Structure formats: structure tokens, C-alpha cells
Length: 226
Image (cartoon, rainbow, N blue to C red; front, side, top):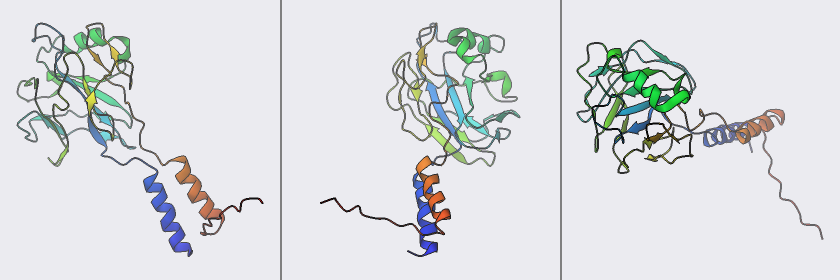
């Protein structure tokens, strides 16, 4: 096997050995809270996660509900670090939305950045997407980079979680960091449920072998002892 072919093989192993997906992802949505009345500030919320390996400044990025129009709800000048998740609370009350959310979900969200209506300067009132709604995410060039629809069908009081690089599903208490909040809902706000994509250990090992052998990867069949 030539050195070039060996190196290409190693690179292929490295690609297969890591998870590949977009950097910013909508990773959790609360469509149907158990809170009553519906006007409670933290009834609807969603989570944005940096699934990549570099920091991203959200200035110029935006989101929208069913209409799917870029630039409607523009994010402020905020840097989201690799592996970090932030929460957007889907209600208008500017005085208590964030604190009500923290009271509901407890100390687990003490260090989580939570945005509400007041953080999206000049934006129209939050829509409150509710059952069956879609959620769209756009980059600072107004290109759609993610979308989550109400599928599977939401279960009241449970979020829909969409871990980095994995299909969406209804959250389960005790799995992927989900827990039951004091207000009754089940979810995992601010907790990234999948690690940041990295090169796998066996991918690195393959590259190391190629380097120390001068680019030749040799496979040997073991002969059974007689």
C-alpha cells in the first residue's frame, strides 16, 4: 500500500471516527408546559447549543416560529462557547420571566444564560409557538441553519430534546440529563446531552501508527496454532 493511500485511509478513519453536525443547534423545546394559566412567563422555551469546537458570537443570528422569516428575533451581542447551552424563554413579562424560569428549574440552571423578550431589542412580542409549531434558526447571513418541528407529538409537561447530531424525541426523566422541575415539567435546560464532536481514540491511534511506520499500514492475519 502506498504512503499516499495509507494517509488517505487514515484521514477517512478520522472522519468516520467523529460525529459530524452543524455547530449551532436547537437542542430542546418545551411546546406544552403543565403550567397554568398559559400566560405564565416560562410556559414555552427552547434551548440553543453550540455543538461545535469554536466560540460563536450570536450577534446577527436570529430565530422565528412558524413563519420561518430570518431577522425577526435578532440575538444580542452574546458569545456562546463550545459545549454551552442557553435558553430562550418564550414570554413577554420583562420583569419576572427569567427569575420565574430559574425558580421552576432550580439550582441546575444557576449558571445557564437565559434570554427573554427584553434581550431581543426591537423585536415584536414573542409568539408562543405552542403545539404543532416549527422553530427556525438563522445565521448572520440569514441562512437557515436548523429547524425543529413538533415531532414526535409533544407530551404535556415534557420537552422535545434534539441532542447534537441525534434525532428528536420526547424527554425522559433521568435520561440525557432530564429531570422533573419543581413546577412539574420534565426537561434538561442548559445541559448538553452529547459531547462536543472530537476525533475518536481509534482514529488517533490509526494516524499514530501511520506516522511511526512511515505511512504504511499493514494488516496481518493471525495463523491459528496447530
